[in-house]
Amino acid sequence: MSHADIRIGTLASGGAKLPNYLRQIIPHGFESFEITFWQYLGDTNLKKLAAEVKAVLADAAELPDVGGRPIISALGLFGNPLEDKKTAKDWARIIDAAPLFGVDLVCGFSGCLAGKPVPEAMKVFKKTWKPLVDRAADKGLRIAFENCDMGGRWDAAQWNIAHSPTAWEMIFNEIPADNLGLEWEPCHQMVSLVDPIPQLRKWVKKVFHVHGKDATVNWDVLRQSGLRGGKPWVFHRTPGFGDSNWTDIITILRQGGFKGAIDIEGWHDPVYRGQLEMTGQVRGLNYLKACRGGAFIPNPA
Image (tube, rainbow, N blue to C red; front, top):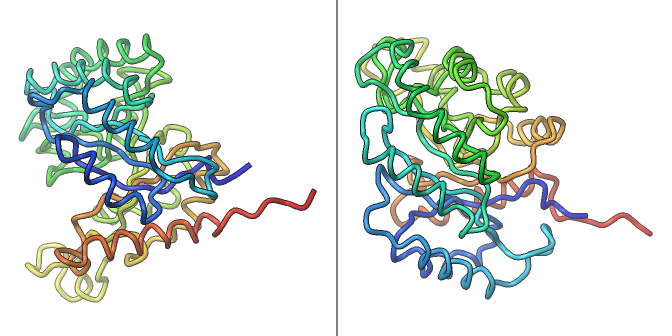
């Protein structure tokens, strides 16, 4: 037994620099990595990259709390496959490559019809995603949509329609597949003034992966200036610096039978950035491990 049911890791950009990046940060204690790509895979040789990454992980020291070495938890491709055929083709390519990395999960945006209301995208959503979901299922893989709104609204979506429970209900109604779920994080819900805790309780069975990103809501600014007062009232945060109770989040995940990873999505915190980026991420890593229960202690025989 160990904490291997929920690993704590971070996101890492795919590409030629990835193996060296992993070598540098693995000693900090990250247990898992989601490898991410923005919009396209480009000329990335996924077979070569997978071999290089697996070699780095094989050289890493074992982590006592999870009873093994670091792993790749998921692959991520973040673009708009509903409008961009190149992104849609790369989704098929990354699904096919996932087994090379030893993962069964591919995450990203669902896409949208830019500037159009969410419901107007449902027909093209099903046409685009049903073959990809089936392709993944045939390989024993799962697909999870991130819950980021990317600055879009219900009446004028941008990049991603999978940003609210109403949209999730529509999406899972269009494609009622067991291997289609969510890449969830509390931050994006808090930016919409949604309480993430009851939401997670309701949707935990559909959560396949968690992004470790939090938010700070400045309620004093909201109460004085409102949503449209021109003053910043919410900030994305690294876990440990925001408002969420991650002990409760991990409790709900475990009670719901979640097995997977919480991977920190860095590079957003307004304070722990630049030269303090990795300082903040390692603080977030250790904070989430504490929320998970601290060091794993075997029971007496």
